[in-house]
Length: 287
Image: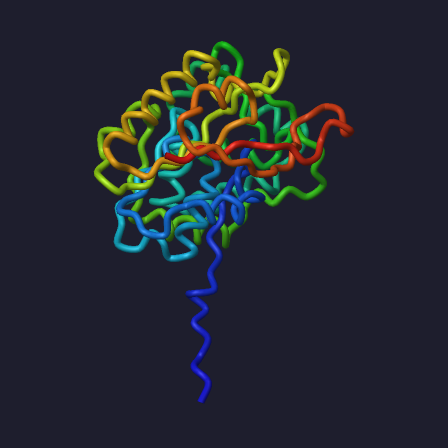
C-alpha cells in the first residue's frame, strides 16, 4: 500500500520580498558548499532571506536556534510582522493591491518625509515596506542621505502584492527564529563552536562608478569590508563555520587570501544597459 503524500513536507518556503543580490538563483551552487552538520544558524545580512528559507525547507534547521539580523529597521519590522501577525498584514496588502497606481505608489513612498511617519503602527510600516518592495524598480531598496526611500516605481502590469501563501509559509518558518535589528558586528554575541554563519553583505563595487552599495543610508566600502573581515576572523577563531559571498574583485580576494575562495556564477540584473546584464562571477569564501 502506498503511503499517503505528506503535503506538509512538500511546502516550499521562500522569500516574501524581492531583494537585490538575493541568492535564490545561486542556491544550488551555494548550498553544496555548506556544511551538512552544524549547530545553530546565523544570517546577519538578512535581506530576502533566501538561504534561510531554503535551509528551513530542507529541514536543516530543525532543533536549532536561528538568529536572523539586519541593520535595516524597516526590513526587520516586516519580518517580525510576518512572523507574529501575518493575517492582518495580508488584509492590509490586499487593500493596497486594489489601490495600486502610480499616484498611490508615490503617495505611499512619501510617507517617510512626514513628521508623523514614526507614529505608524508596525503593521502599517510593514504593509508600506512590502508594497513598495513589490512595486518599485527591480525591488531595489535605496534611500537618500536622510534615510528616505527614493526608488522610482517599476513597470509591472500585475504585481503580486498580497502573496498570501508565501507570507503564511514564511510566518511558519520564522516561528522559532530570533529576529534582530542589529549590525553584523553583533553576530559574535550569540555564537558557539560549530555554529554556521552566512555573510551576504552589500557587495564591494566592481567599478569606481558602481552605486548600489548603499542598501541603507550607510555605504559599505573599504572600511566596512575590513570590519567584516575582522568579524570573520573572530568567528574563525571560535571554531565556527563561516561563509561569505561577495564580488569577484581584487580587494576582496586580497583581503581573504588565506581562506578558501571559490567562484560561483550569478545573474546580474541591476544595470541600466541591457547588454551589461548576464552572468557574472561572485566569490564564496569559506574558512
